Image 1 (tube, rainbow, N blue to C red):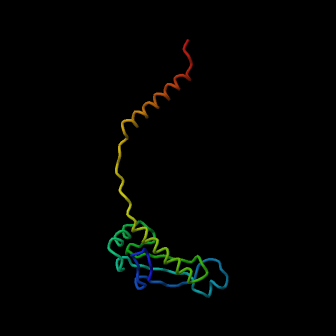
Image 2 (cartoon, rainbow, N blue to C red):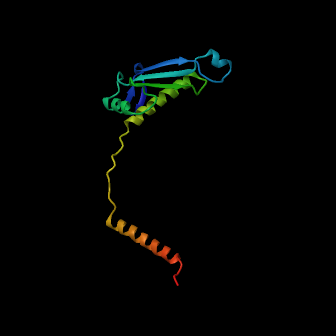
Image 3 (cartoon, rainbow, N blue to C red):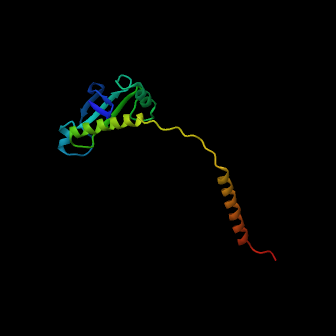
Amino acid sequence: MLQITEDLSLPDTDIELSFTRSQGAGGQNVNKTSTAVHLRFDIRASSLPDFYKEKLLLLKDQRITRDGVIVIKSQQSRSQEQNRVAALERLAALIREAGVIHPSRRPTKPTRSAKRKRVDSKTRRGLLKVLRTRIAE
């Protein structure tokens, strides 16, 4: 059971984990142990509420395929268990991020006094520049 928020969790059956050999340097251990984790999570087939599904499918994230499957690869650690935990945490963070509702921006207009202050400062600046010019003889 993956706990996402206080009132939202995912059953382990929704998440598919596979283990492969890690890439890069690491000596003999890399060649004989499968420590990298490939996590696959099908958004449409999951037990997430519809609100989260819609938000996740609308995200422009390279980890989400056209079919609506989230693919996360974790190979930072030399331990399979640490990579598994890291991949699950990244999935939880992605779902949490999708669930955040941002308040819509209400367009505002500058007040009359703000407009007046802006024009006054422009005229003051202009007068200062006029004082810097040469005096005509």
